[in-house]
Image (cartoon, rainbow, N blue to C red; front, side, top):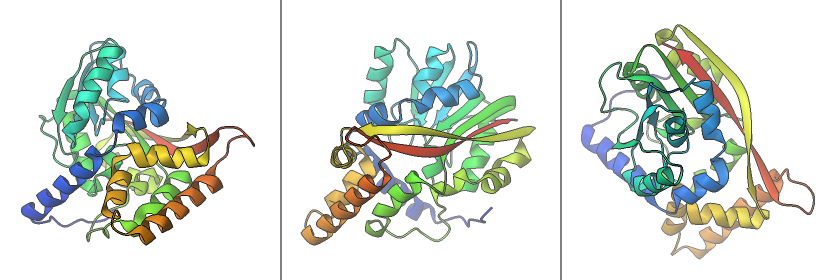
Length: 279
């Protein structure tokens, strides 16, 4: 586990504000519903969510996992650094016949009491907070003794890593101490972060498929809906050469990574690790 020194509060607040602005762009509800909707139920089932339990979804977005937990009968709090997602999340929850609480929250400093939740989950969300040690500490802190922590985390190899590598040259360089979200897919990293606070911890490989009519359509969907990518293209608006180079690299990735049938829709297999532990 990497040791991360505390950063000046003002600098960290500015960084978090910029992250929030980026994730608020685009149409995250459309992105999540069209591409990753099937992952939420996997996390909820692995966590053993059932009626009577109090559940926290960390970095919930528009409720991919939180809504499924509410459908299972639990009392659910959906938390996210970007409250701009909540209006779409509430609307989606209503369509699925459930209600839940929505709370603005930083995964590195959750605004909840120690041991407040029976189950703490995160579906491809908390991994994007840069200080993994703080995130793990908070997940453990708010989970009650005997409770369950469950996560879906992208792996360091595969399509997810290749996807983010396309955009890395156009993003600000990581700050000293920032950790890649892909590290949450490494067993040694996860065990170093979580195992000391758990009775047992299991990791299992999983995958899901993102689909679009074609590689070009996949690129356009991401460019329209996924906030961080929308933000990058906005920053390049006055740099047509850089925009064209990014478009070329993105389409090359989409063509190369397509595992769909010849002549059929584009399909992208994203590998992740399902992490489940008992406190």
